[in-house]
Each structure stands twice: as C-alpha cells, then as structure tokens.
Amino acid sequence: MARITSLEALRAHYGEARERSRRKVLPALDVHCQRLISLSPLVMLGSFGADGRADVTPRGDAPGFIAVEDAATLLIPDRPGNNRLDTLTNLIANPAIGLLFLVPGIDETLRVNGRAEIHDDTDLRARFEVDGRQPATVLRVTVEEAYLHCAKAFMRSHAWDPAHFVSRDSLPSMGEMLRDQLSLATAETQAEMLQRYRETLY
Image (tube, rainbow, N blue to C red; front, side, top):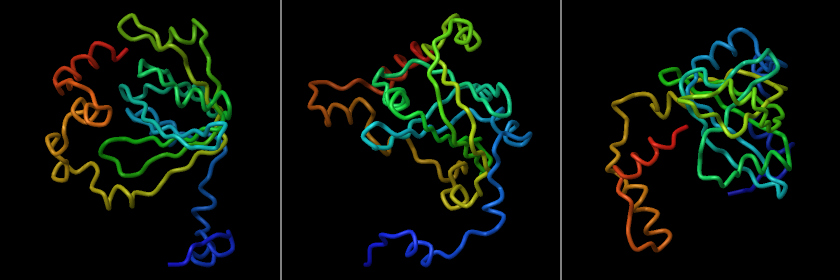
C-alpha cells in the first residue's frame, strides 16, 4: 500500500471537486443555515491546541440552544462538564473552531468554520439560564465559512434508523469501563451515573 504524501498526488488520486461543492461555501449564515441551527439539539465542536493536536467534543441541549446573534455570529453556552476544559484550553491558544450541526432524523448536516472567543459577561450568561443556573462561559463564534454537508455518511451508517440502534447492554456501563481502565476498586452503576448526570445537567 502506497502512502500519499503530497497534495498533487492526493488530488490526482481523487480528481477535482465538483463545481457545486466548491461554490456552496458561504461566508455567513443564510436563512437555511439559520433554520437548521434552530432545529439542532447537538453540535460537534472541533478545536486545535497549541501543540497542534486536534480535539472534537459534543455539545447538546434543547433544539436551538445555540443562538444565532446575526448572520456572522453564534453564541454557544458552556454547560457543566468534567472541567478538563480541553476545548476552552485549545481556544485560548488557537481560536480556530469547526462546528458540525446535527438534527436527528435529517441526514444532511451543517458545517461551520470560524473563530471563537470565550466570554463570561454576566448579561450574556444570563441569556442562557436554565432552572436558575447560568453557563460558566459563552463562546462567541465569528463565522467565516458555512456549508451544507451531503447525506451520504448518514445514509450509509443508518444513524437515525431505530432498526439499527445498538442496545446499551452491548457495552459495559461507563462506570465498569472506567473501573477497568483506571484500576478502581468499585464501579458506579449505570443508574447511579445517570442520576448524577441529571442532577448536574445545568
């Protein structure tokens, strides 16, 4: 198997991109992009650290939890997590960000690339308050590129088809896997973990 190491070889292997694929990249969010974001309860967020290592993390909430401030600006609340701060640490070093918006039941996705700033303004955080709790910070994303991504990956994976869903008991519980990975004495049950999560969602 030959390794491809140059852009010339890569392009020769795949051929040129279709004109429509090149032209579909928008410099801001049009009405269709904004509508898809309003329906999306889940976004995958990609960032790069100072060491060049990549990271992708999910962000989810009720549909439309990401606010479209205007055609060039998105606001993303940062809900409680594990405080590793992988994404936020990366954004301090390198503000480049990539977003992939998903809508359950719809195979097309939306890709947005831009630059992010971390804000802790009281008024801004208050806009995203849920059950009396505000996010610790809010990401302000300046959109540089936005484009719709075709349905092929979701068609091949059957990701939204219940007939292809995997039963949760196909894997050990999260607690059991962490016990084995970290050599812990005991394992939190799946029920205990879910209850803990419910108490700290916001």
